[in-house]
Image (cartoon, rainbow, N blue to C red; front, side, top):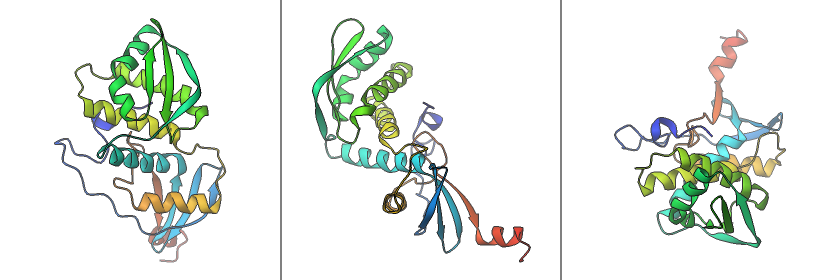
Length: 215
């Protein structure tokens, strides 16, 4: 998992002052390319949207907004998950158990290198739990030990959103594509994911016409 851009969330300046969100025009999806990119148009040109990165941005902002008023909804696992980890990764998760709980994770130590997971965020599919926690352990292990609670929450939120977002090579219905584009348009910092990857590539009408020698 790439680090948060510049040690901070993409979209925020080095001074910690939030940059102005980029405006996105209403877009109409035409279809997918290789079940990974949404091809859409607006009145200014064509957009190629990375469906995973776009959905990740949407979910991250939703998670952070929810955290500002409380904690995320969680779902209890019918059978608790036992996850064997390297000792350092185990300690990284247990040391951040409080922050993980706010995101909807319920974890406890089950020995020197095993954690017991009783609940996970409701937005996270059951099949993604193990991969998400392994990624979180790696991210938190690499986090500066002096990092504050807010930085840890942002890292956990970004990793959780990444694993909950629709994947590449996944077919989407027209309704799902429209939903992602509409949610993206209403999302702050919608041109990059929390880790700094670009959400879309744009071709303006002028660029298209110039390449076809119409202007």
